[in-house]
Amino acid sequence: MDLLDWFRGTLSTRRVALLFEHLPATSATVTAIIAERSGVQPAELRSWGPTELLLAKVIDAIQIGTHASVQMNTKKKIKPPAPITIPGQAAEKSKPRRVSVTEMRKIMEG
Image (cartoon, rainbow, N blue to C red; front, top):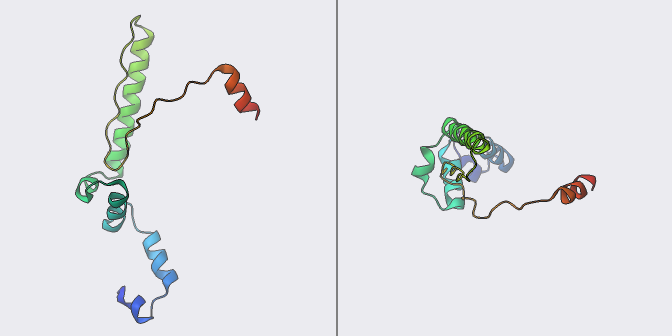
């Protein structure tokens, strides 16, 4: 397929939009768009495919579970593990807000 056909008028804008919409997440175009939005070099993002992203999430979950298990069986406070840094994703800078039981009831009841 020749994208110049769009300029020639033989390829519709709808067709071009559909082609871009269905590009795989690992394509150069999608990687460039994500890199531009997040301020990361495209080469750094290309090294992380869906398998690597999923593996990083699994490792984070295992570390959190291990930390919780050790913390339950220890009297002193243990520092929680840092999540794996994923290119293109901003690190969380704020701490999660603590919510009391009464606040949770109000939220749940609407």
